[in-house]
Length: 97
Image (cartoon, rainbow, N blue to C red):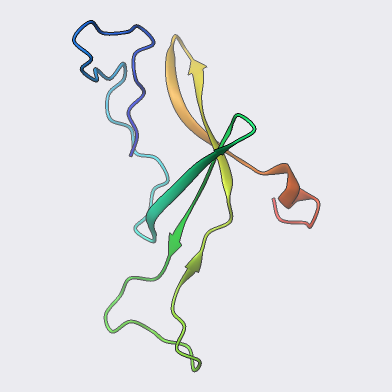
């Protein structure tokens, strides 16, 4: 889920969304996203699992995996901000896009 913040600084410091709630990254298999900033880019990845009971385990005891990283950003669209994500260009070089 995502809310885009107002570009104007609020005097009281309270978060006031500029847009209504918008679903983002639909699905129930994306969990506990982590993000970091590198060279001015915001990179995010998360945990991916089927999240069903009983939890399916591989023979070696592993279950789930991390998603591919992607760049997230706020983009001006029709006079308001929206959250979007892009495949990292590094992944395209190995055929993952």
